[in-house]
Image (cartoon, rainbow, N blue to C red; front, side, top):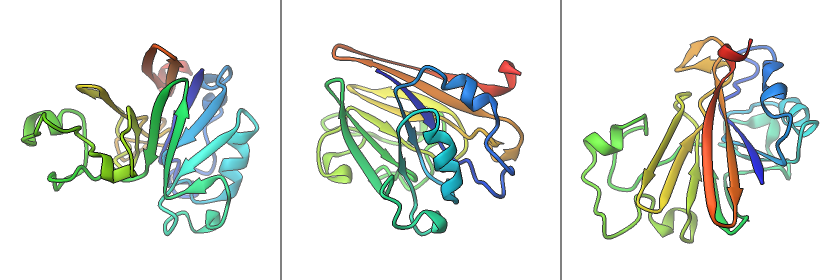
Length: 186
């Protein structure tokens, strides 16, 4: 299964529309997970024209999407034998900051006797956590858990410029993810 990962589209605000290159990056995906800050339902509709979609949104921020059945505060899905979770703002218990690349590895005294994202965060044990909020792409593994932030296609590292999305490929025995730099596709 091939899953398109996107977050922090911030439309309107970050841009007027999703960059057309996202459609090219996602042309062969089976499913899309949006990590929140989508703001308006037309963005979800546009992405759904590519593949089925679910959004892990901050429902209070995604005001126009409140009540949309495609949007939930948190998601947990079984996909190809993997438990995949998504949330907009990942809060790692015991760590008081935002999750940027390498920050957990360098500034968090992680107790390796438990997962980096404990079971109570999503109500069950998860293998893969997709999140957004920082607009900065990240792929990190902590023992058996993989953390993925696809970045933002419209606010690369919180700056108004074309950014990134990600592709997650799952089979029953494997998981691979790669960041797609939209700027390099143009």
